[in-house]
Image (tube, rainbow, N blue to C red):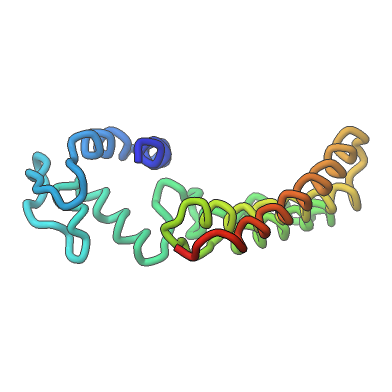
Length: 179
């Protein structure tokens, strides 16, 4: 829980929500416990979100957006609706290598959007498989288009190690409970 708060706090801090969230998170009892509303907020929970009772309005809005499948506002790059869409940063005449890395990156982020089970072990393993595959795909682009000997050697190691870890993660998933 504490780790989740730190990660979310870091993300929210980028959008100026950090102080409100820290104050909210540090003063909230365990789920289901009664809470007093935070100063300047509604005493009623946000519709469909009893856990957000007393949360600052920005937190309630962000939670609604995230629960509807949208990204948190702090995670979005300025001017984009998808935090992982880096196409605006790609030069007009991008090289085949750049386009390959970009395609691998987009595929990796898309494939990492798993349905979470509530089982941290299963969710971690299921998330890491596409993450590792993305690293492998990017490393293959470097081998096809890169020139730096140190990076080419690193890419070979990434492919070798990540392929081995994908096999290991898949084996672990076969023995983990579904939830």
